[in-house]
Length: 210
Image (cartoon, rainbow, N blue to C red):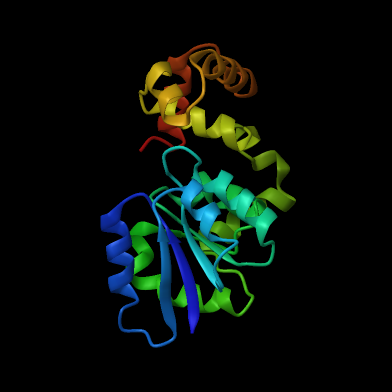
């Protein structure tokens, strides 16, 4: 039996995942967490084979949680689930130690296959992610500027291009507005831009806006 911890802040998503694997005989959700902090408390206590981890959560996000999980149990496979397309977070997830990345809109068709593959010690990546990996390794000149952002910078960049105010971003991330301003300046510098409007236009062109 593949024993799984499922981490997602939306109850409806967790219920949907349970329905997807309901008829399988070799997969069992043994625990659930609604955020990264809860997950990090459970991981050391449970006998787990795999973790399903959402990218976008309030407080400690999926990438931060993934990195912390790997410090606790480095060999446990983690499958990242996301509402974001592969080009936004897949590479960041794989580099942080994830064994696979699956978009939520494809989960109903691919989730069970992905879980079984990762459980055997292999990686689960889509053709799109495979192409991103090739570009990352062999085609440095083809990389987009936003791939140069750190995980935190990219997270804040995403909030900005989706129209969130510094105050709301600060509240969501539990950091100060001054810190948000500092990160915004770093993002502008790395993307070689001057204004938020330029960031938004870039986000639209790169299909990064939700």
